[in-house]
Image (cartoon, rainbow, N blue to C red; front, side):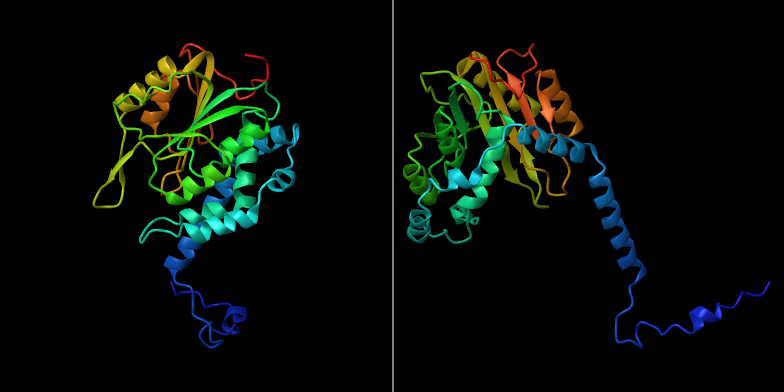
Length: 283
């Protein structure tokens, strides 16, 4: 058999090189289709549906981030930025000076827990950072306490600026937290990273084992949560964009009675109870 000749139509088309443009290689085309496929998968994934549900729920109890932003002296935040420059090779911690962005983030966090509609709560925020979340909690009528290291001078300045009380300490595996001499209705940890131990040669993190997580959760439940209290842990996605919850970790958190939603795990003081994000009745 003789090979069929190209259609006259295609013979008349100029080559990409003759037009001064580089041709796409098969590898480039493959990468393009892989990226496009991933975007479609994300668009129609479970996570996308849950994200939509979060937006719907927030719309039922709107909060004006603009009005909250108006309570902050942004000129003073600019002064703090100048007073506490980043350390050499440190992460860009002064990105937290962007009050507009972080107020928006923390308004959504507060809405997801219905803190704008709940009775006054005692809240402990682990890794409180710049203090935006606890600042909002106080505006909603709650009493908050932060817990964090004192490695970032900028956080020291912002927590003082927001009048956020905090205890200095570090969360270590298989080690009880310091005694705070009180219990809380809600303990939170946002963008948790205290479970990361060290980086391997290939850049991946060595992390806590399920046994380490069990020790930490039991310590929070026994020593820091009231009988109807809740523990919320919010995690970053992994470097490849996948969920923090590997099959092993998902099975473990489920065994602890966690309600897993997107990148968050919500746990009750009692492992036999399934907690709710919406908890507006008086505790």
